[in-house]
Length: 366
View 1: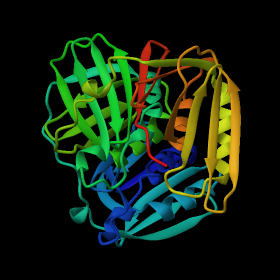
View 2: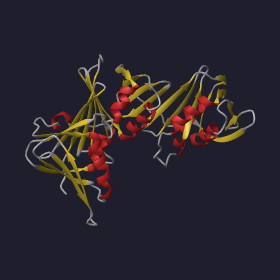
View 3: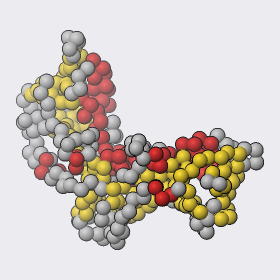
View 4: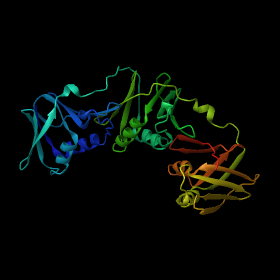
């Protein structure tokens, strides 16, 4: 195995693969990158057994083919400190990977490819195409509602659902719900898959770096996305996602309007004194005022008053302040509309770039 490549291209590729988190400490080969050298291209593969990213490089000088795995941390740290303009020669010699430039030479230990776990999946002919910006925005506006290590394993991920001419990106932890509805023109049958939390977070990292059309392939037990010269694949969660449509309140009993920035700033200030995990705050709607109140075990109190547009009855609810802030941080409207049911279920909606965002936050007791 031997090839030469511009260091700037190799470093960028390794940086994208290096970010894949490995939580499996028992399998040391997961700390490596698999390098497969063919006659006309090279594949660099990284996986944590749940997510796999394959990077393809065509613009390099291939001298001989081969396959090996090497520590991605060491290889990346060497390359990023070499000159971007340098040509890197990489070859295998006595089971060592040699990395050389005009003035540098490194010899790294390797492991054979046999123990490297690839994600095996059955390809279907079901796929769709959309721009990376559309998907990135949908994920960024909903991912924060995913559960973390919930015993209801299907909540520890995100739902991708295609129905008629709509794609839904949905996440929930049982206490809050985030929905992004995208109008699409896909000629595919109804699809519903759940991508695990780790897969969603890794996908967001990759989408942040490329603006291009992407192909999404729905396989029997995985989902794959072709993004520039990368193929991202994530295993799926085998489970049934809750009926999110049924959770959206049909009747709106209370409706208020206020400046988004004013509410966001008030919440950011008031949470500084909250020291319990629920981040509970009281919302008191009184005539033309929204009053926010929080306290803590040290008997400290915070109070914020915001002028609102409201003429209904006086009500009082309590919510997790972080749940509301997460929503406000992704919205861009100047005037925000909050709607409540009589039992305190909060609904926030907005339309951003033809994507309908809907958020449901359940009240708490404090």
